[in-house]
Length: 286
Image (cartoon, rainbow, N blue to C red; front, top):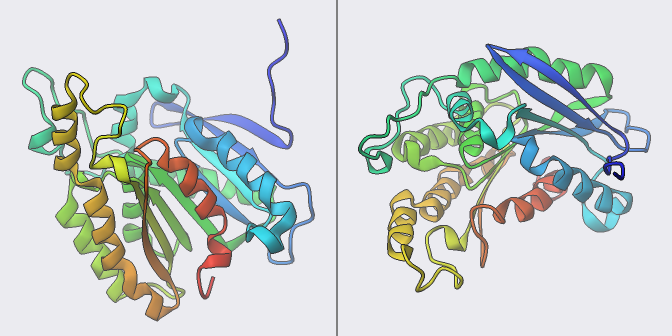
């Protein structure tokens, strides 16, 4: 048996909160921090994209002048059970009172429990941020929260609930379809009366989230897959979010939506990681 590959300059510990175990993974640069401290990415669902985020940062930050990516600390939080604990993940990322829409319910299958988002936010605020920022020189003015899918919805709602906590929020394919009218209304309200300084918000989706990719066309069940994707309106909701958040630019922040061609709900994460790491170089006033 050969040893596993281990990323250098990383650590992982287990946190226990509200009856569940979480892994906190941290990666740090090999250069001295600037006077104000490093930017930091707080990454949700780190079991999916922690190494991706770290390797993207390390490939690009040595040439910050060419890539726009500064040396950055990456702090990833994930359930210890990873993908296997889907019901707990749904609980963690949904606010109280949020219910699975009728068009996603199936006869004989009880809907998942929801409402745990305040507890997860408490874990972030009371444990994760203090731990990372005690052990590493962090610039609190350059905190970024990154979430994908349901984690992207949680990231957006964290922005609405605690608008000064993270200067930047990136939501890759956020599951806005859980409550599209409510999310869009809260986005518009934030853009109309943002905190000072105003946040930088990037929302993304992939073209194939409302269309069938070539490899699914003509396959059994393709029609139902397409119908489900169009009910969720991932692309349409992201574009609407971009419009709602665009007024942030007039307040020193930014609100952008990007739809990546030829990408799907999973692959969109890779491109969004790349864009998130350079948000401090591409957003006016950052």
